[in-house]
Amino acid sequence: MNEIDGIYYEFTKKNIGFERDFLTFKLFENEKQIDMWEYELLKPNTDFAGGLIKNPEQKTRRRSRLKDAGQNVWQMGIYFPHSKFPEKHKTSDLAQHIIKNKTDDSSSGKIALGMYLTAKERNFEIFNVDYIVPIPNFRNENVKAVSIANALSNIINEKEKKIIPVKKVLIKTRDIDTKGMTQLDKDKFFEENQIYQFSPTLDIRGKTILLVDDIVTSGNAAKQCMAELKKAGVNQICFYCATTTF
Image (cartoon, rainbow, N blue to C red; front, side, top):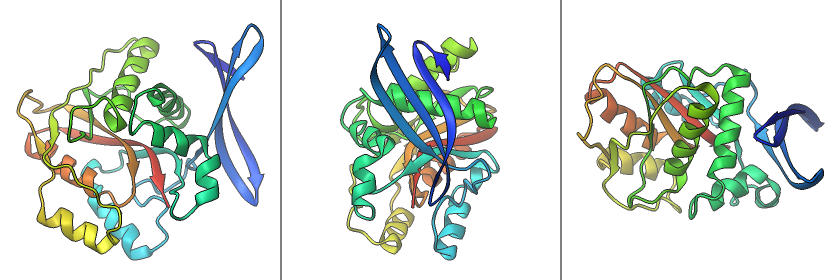
């Protein structure tokens, strides 16, 4: 196992019906293991823009929504939604950390560490951007993408000796809940409503931005955020999400 700040980790493959990739962490205190968590990762050759969506038409639509990031679209691991995979949702460490991170930031460091190590392992080009920009919350809580972005920035700054600050240049204009909506309803809702807007608190013209999110499914939120960043004059957008759903 490798070690980072007293946490031991390894990338492994397991044959559970079919071969899967995992990132396993172990934390020791006085030579005694006190914690362990494991993230199921996407394969290195995954179509990150299309994700794990099975429906070919929906997969094509998601690719189209994330096109403003070009080839610079990456995700770390797999999120198993409770509605489709109730048992897997309960036993998945990554799913539980993502859920916990929606209400407090105590899991954000674990998620961000996984994203950092996966980016190093898979050569995701996240280390030469100018700013990290999280997909925002309606209220300015340090949860979801915001807390992950802050933790990821801190890890990069410490481990890579590069200062890549988090800049909250996007705002969420409405508190929305799309649960219960069909995918078509969600698509129509985002087409008819501007939920995310650029906040002109910083001149980002000519900059390279790493847009960070916790979960991506259809890509509607990322699409609006990327469009706002493009209108603000950024040179390049990279999109890195902690998880993608089936």
